Length: 153
Image (cartoon, rainbow, N blue to C red; front, top):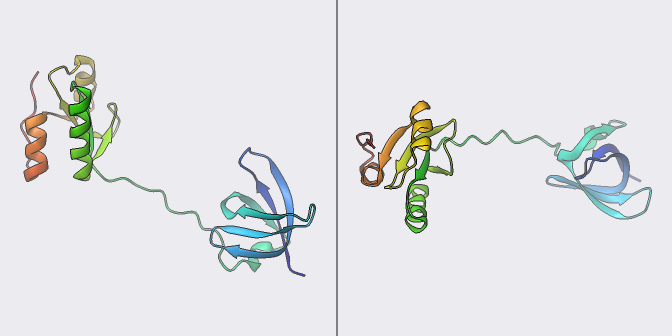
């Protein structure tokens, strides 16, 4: 009878030792019958804290954490536009491989300002070295790839 044992942390943060019989691997999961309550269970490999009694050596597909996802798309934020117009501009930027942010962030590259742009957000963006552009400048940039002249309020 094949069994595997491990220390597991569930979604609530509770850590428990498990012994699972008649187990099999299915991608990111270990499935089998729990020896304590004879119930069929599925365990996520990424929540296994440690394998007991050399259990990891019996795995054919040990869990390997994926590399952190790095978003290299330029970040843009829109301010001072009516809701509908802002949504259209956000969709346009997203469709051109830009990452749309709702506020001025550390990695923000562009702040696109409408007629009601608030001075505080513009000042924060300037302090972070963002290029401040208006809607025509954004459209030019998206259509041609050419960086527009900075917007002056």
